[in-house]
Image (cartoon, rainbow, N blue to C red; front, side, top):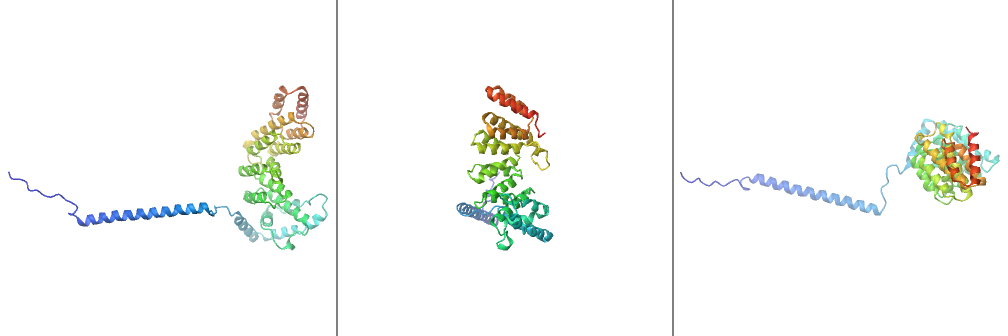
Length: 338
């Protein structure tokens, strides 16, 4: 049998059209990869540049735009409310002229306008007019008007106003009387964000810090109550201790927890217990007007565990303190606030 003739196998030159296509795919793939890499590099460069310069605003940063939108919508839908508000605002000078205390009581008249007056009041707070005729003429009237606006608007507990309250709380131009009203409005939102904002502000040694500390008692969240308890445990000066005792009484108030406006109901037991524990500890360590303030706060909190806390404190107290604790226990048994 003869030899089998050699037949060359298929090689790259057997299908030149397929080889060219393959080359085009490879070249095209590398081109796309290079373009993609250039795009990624450019994006990273932009990120790097923006990190060292002005950052792009995040969604929600321009909260004033949202307020303006709501104000414009309210003005279109209910213009009569804005007219009634302007009428009430025009009476502030007369109220100021008749005032007996430091500030005229403006908020009752504004609250009487009802919840529909929210946006006219917000407009005056967030975007005050520059024309003098539209403002109360006397400085004391302008201050009373602003305090009244914050009090009346804050009583509505509208979460959309949280950025406004934060802005006013942080502004160096906000007067002390307004700061107290603003801190209270923020606290009444009873959100964790509001609580943490107030806790941070309460560490400042100025009017802003005092206002935030007192308002923490109105922000009935456990984190806020613990911050108050820690501050009282630090045993600051007597005046501060009196304010802290009152704030703890506000936070744990048995009456307040029965109202419909409280939000974090699952935290009630823990809040009232934390408040009672801190107040009993302070009662043992204080005397005079501070002890009376602590005792009054304990009556307001009226936590179920308070008698047990008093008994435990009595076991390690000296005889003089034991007598004081016995008096506290007796007062608690006949709590007139129940």
